[in-house]
Length: 101
Image (tube, rainbow, N blue to C red):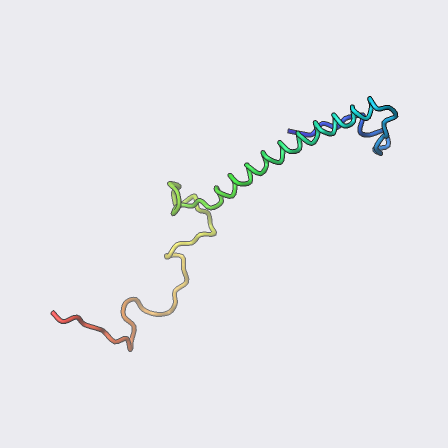
């Protein structure tokens, strides 16, 4: 929704025109009140859309039913991590604790 600019609010030089009569003052006030209502509605709509978009940003394949391919390049998986240089399994020097049978 685009705000409507009223001719009573601005003159040809884009400077505010001062109303000459009380009736013109009321017209300007009414136009400003309408503009405020439109801007309030526009703000509420945009806040609702921002909240919805923020919730969408949080979603990925782990927190929704989206497939992993839709996660994008930012979320890598274990296979794409760099190798640490260590071999798999128990490391040298690690003491093995055995449970008595």
